[in-house]
Structure formats: structure tokens, C-alpha cells
Length: 121
Image (cartoon, rainbow, N blue to C red; front, side, top):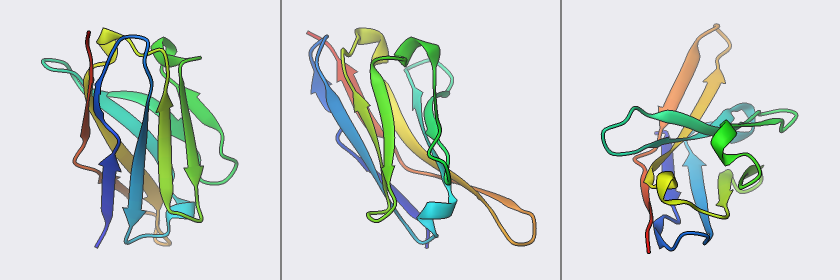
């Protein structure tokens, strides 16, 4: 059974930091590309950051570049999102996402249930 379990969300003041974690199980983590998405109230879910399975190359939404860092620890089956210099507009539910291919050419997507990040004074 595939599970993605996010943790680390909470309330933080503007300018503060949080570190989100996503613990994966039920699939071969090292073969999956991992991403963090977020969804603010009344808005569509958007991609925040992603990291590949092999080279560890990363990509970021423009508005978080230089403030957020995605990383992964394949030995711990965990992906992280370090968020610094947080702004009120970063307030959202943050979701962990995994995508991997199969030997028969299918693409499988998995989602966590999300963790709420609130940036407010």
C-alpha cells in the first residue's frame, strides 16, 4: 500500500522558516520523481518544487526560487522542503507528490493528504 505522509506544517510569522517532510512507503522511492505542490484557499493546486529520481535535478516555481529548497534522502525514503523567508502568500496546504514509471510503460501518480502552512503575524 502506497503512502505519502507529510509533516512539519504549522503557523509561522512572516520571515520565518519551516521544514516539511514527506515519508514514503509502498513503492521504490529511489525510482520516483518527487514534488511539492500547494493549494491556497480558492485557488488551484500549483507546483512548488520538484526533484528527479536519478540526478537529483531540481526545479522551482519562480516565486519561491532562492527561498525554498527541495531535497531527498533515498536511504530514508523521505523528501523535504526547506522554506525560508516565508511570506503570507505562501499560506496553503502543501502536498507531497510522487510519480514513477512501470515496466509496462504506465505512469503512476501518488499524493499525500497535505499539511497546512500558515504564514501570519
